Length: 433
Image (cartoon, rainbow, N blue to C red; front, side, top):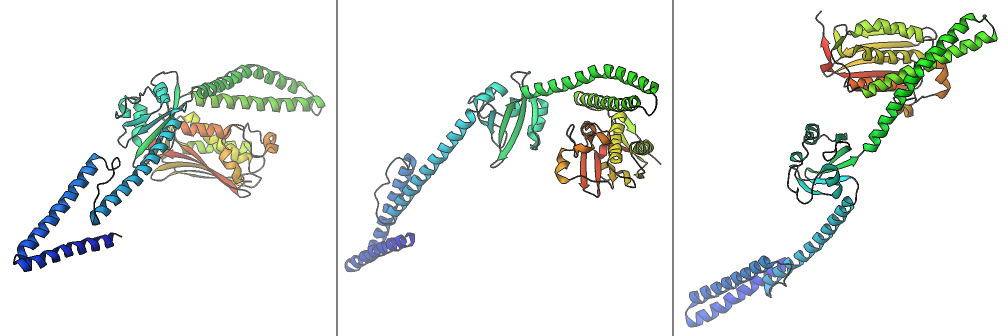
């Protein structure tokens, strides 16, 4: 169609030049007739451009296009059609935007739309309640100029939004917020802030309850343990009373271990972070870990130690020893007579590693993600025979978090398991040989 229009316009112009040449030859003014015809055509085309400019300036979508013939008529009609289709698309997009904003506006969570430079484009009503932002008064202002908490500014400007960020509401310091940021489009950002005050309070109540109950039970249980052990010593051997006192002693000690672990976990959760000023000689811990494995194992275990003796770990020595001890004792409990347990301490360029690897019974893959949950047991039938409390790996996890580390678990059923504590290399020092 466009090609056909050009051909028609060229034919029309050629016809005009032909008519002008005919009369110019008859009247002996050929050049003047040709020049005048070309000038008239140019002036007509300029007039069409003037009308197009006026139509576009007034708003092409509001008025009908000017009447024109030939190619100019096609140009006007095509632009008018494009404009109408554009208006339809814009109307649909605007309706979608209004629907999305209406949905966000009704949310109890704060929602803030941000441009690539971090300035506010839109915010819902909850953003005023939770963050103190006012729409549309704050539109165009940088978010970091309104929310001035240094930790939040560092989180927002890091562009690393894999984890949620918790902060106190700038409107009410008693309100705790969970903040998440999503990136869309060309580095536009969408910020969500949720009130988690109730959740935080419930979590704190749970921690306080566990700590208080454990503390209250500790003293009477100690008294009970003392009397049970005294009566057990007085009972005659191989009698029903002796066997009953033996079971009572075993179960009371198990309860004592459970309370001790609960109090340890409560303390780890309540304190902000572990001390980082102790230099732990891990090679010095290996002998104690070997003895703990021998005491916890039922039968013989082969213990192999591979230790970088020049590498020391900075942190809380008691907590580090507790974490390593838990892993070593677990390996002893869940291996069989004749199995091998390997302890390793080494480092590469970026991290330091403490590993406990065994050739024991292994763990099914579906259990691995939940092993560090409190009281989670792979096999409930072994709960009483192993003597564990179900809190050991939870304690290990919290200790590593407090030392900026992580716990990695790999296991194959029937072939064994490997528990790896990973520390940043900045948490280690080399001892001169």
